[in-house]
Image 1 (tube, rainbow over the protein chains, first blue to last red):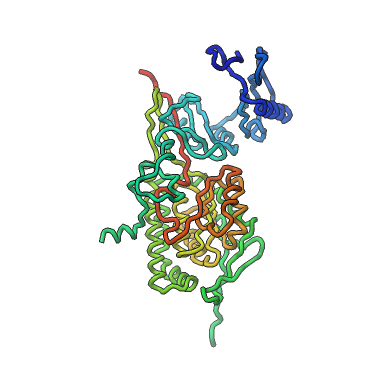
Image 2 (cartoon, chains in turn orange, blue):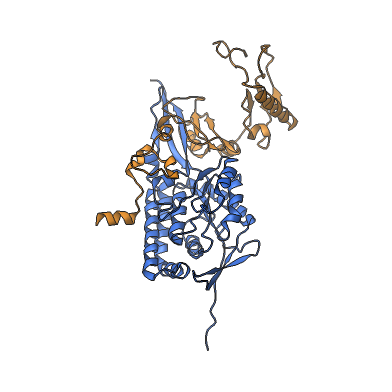
Length: 192
Length: 287
């Protein structure tokens, strides 16, 4: 593993963005060890300037551990094991966050069934960390409001022609301008 | 010999059961002119939390039901509402002081609105979902998924049944489970709707109804970490800005209060307000 200048093509992992975040990663990793997870980091060189954290893998992690439930936002990977898809889904959803998830399987029907039940805004199947301006990005639960990218990302900047500036309009998709708020009764009246 | 009247004591509707408030409190529901109508349970913060627990445990099953099935279950409720029409009309006449024909029109509109939302159950996904054209060998699709447990402060003015239906039906369409605080002074049609739901195919815990003070319960629901969204449509008279601040603490989705005759008017956006877009990427083979 090469830690260094993020603009250098040969770099695997760049710096942590602030002293505060480095402190948080350091604290969470310490808690991970205290709670009984096994810590492993490669013996690699760290640059002298900047905020650096050695890439770290935790094994023997259980669902109650902070490093499993909180988002570390650093080069720290918590590894949990599972025996059945149900167990994997329960463990993946056992967090107040839900930004992204990944599934690896050579069975397409299983990929789709698991993707249905994961509570995350973006799910990568047999790939990871893919982004595209045409694909909405954003999370469930405490991972944020709204989506960026794709038709859903554009919707936040649009208001259907003729709609009032009501609070619900913020959630309105561009495509629904044809379905203006009309009760069935109002429709019946209009038909008469 | 004259018969003694049996005044009804309305209860809460939590997890498919009709419990009294754990606090033991009740309050008198009156006509607009102040005559006694019935006793209703005055729910406490503990009742509100129990309702959230019931809603959370019902979420998996209701969210995973097929869209078509949810539509059928919701449509069946409209049939049951129609069967209880006379009771709803009588309760609205008594508690809102309306004429029988005006009350009848409100019940009609509430049933029509319920049917309208039921019809959306197997359609909103096509309208709000999208196949995304990404630049690469990936199948990429976005679909709206239910947000989770939705707390609702039902409209506190206007038609009591219509307001309740207008707030609850859209949240159910996408597979959310709800905890509703009913109209405080005119809760009878809400609880009667609860009795309808209990005998319908809606699983217990999908709709939980609390009667009592919105001012007392709303702060606990807004700050509850297991509530995913809160509809403040009927919270206009409360300190709703602070409710919104409390809700933001755990990124709870918020719909702001609405007022006027068409508060919570039927719209697709009320359904989509309680959905989260899930985007799935899958690799495509290169041939």
